[in-house]
Image 1: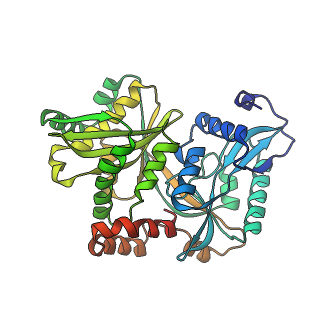
Image 2: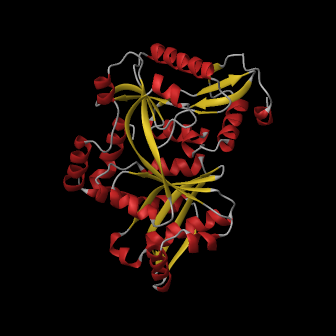
Length: 375
């Protein structure tokens, strides 16, 4: 079986097979990644390398399904079994990521029914009553309405790129953003792209730790990003901003298929007036244009400040949801088990983390909390 067989005509009357992937099936693991790279909504969290990152950093057990039809891959469903003192036991697709869930193509209504029957059986075997799905890309609305419960919704910001960065600069990037980038450049801030393990631990992580403290969010351990560099090295990109020989900001993201997806902007707030964050964003966008990428995914939008910042780069906004698959579970119970970072309790938790947890202690407590939240 090869990835080229994906586009061949298939027998529409034949059902699908939901196959649990094992680590020993190297050929299928390779085909899995090829499938993700060719799917328009494929993200770093769908790749096999991310499976290794989560397993080795947090110790979750992976549950990765291949969806086959006529012995050809027509979909994938990556997920992990998570145990939490806050939410109990659940399956999450994908933990620590805005995205996840099923990637599929050429599935009929009946095929989707069979997939969800298979997921129900997987839940029964593991004595789990809920799957948390971060995104429902490619799943028909009729299937979502029948099987999935929307736990909360927001927007995501997507910038459509061009092979000519000047076109993006002049037609999409706002005057405010252009002014900020020029200020950074005139002020002596420089930006370059490099991925290096030592730089991740010595330069990126201290900025990340301080940024998470300001945001009131528990940090990942350094190992999470080191493992990303190890297992996703062909896709990981980091743009660094320097001022007078000091690293003052970094923008980390992943280039997968035709899409760049940024996940972390970290910076030293003492240098914000130099506008290093803006220079990092524009440098990454320009790099994407020059290297043939079609989309620049600036991630989720949960409050007005995020919207304004992402809008100034010319991004458009699309509705984006997380879902719960929990056959037989009542709505109130589903809500109590699903994580919502915008809930009143999480806003209170964030404020308390920001005010009460010392920076040095957050490095050790953060990963413990993150593991319980699976976010």
